[in-house]
Length: 165
Image (cartoon, rainbow, N blue to C red; front, side, top):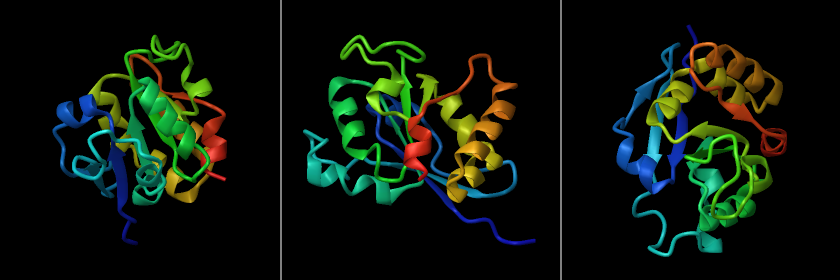
């Protein structure tokens, strides 16, 4: 059996960093998943352009909220090759801060502000493999399978294709 490539996820949302209790996960096929909390990686004011430009190269998937500053950060990273997941109470709708949807904000995926959704994504190996293969069609297919087991579906946007080019 071939060894599966490690998967690294960046957890940038302050809420998620506080609420997500997993330091290492294993996908349903045995892949090692490292949720990397960026505490100490970004400055207090965070979202400085030189810091933001480094982030896409640090992981395979980025989870971030939808404040105005977060959306500004997403705009700086949306075409840098790493899919960005909106982790937000505004799931499926418009942000009360910027009045933008997840897609308008530049996010690749949209999930509810619930740590179990992060865990579900990171434990679904077909999803992780599709991200590593940079294959948006496979990502969407894996999400269809995953969504069958979720009460609220994970939403994909057109930025998924842009991020995985």
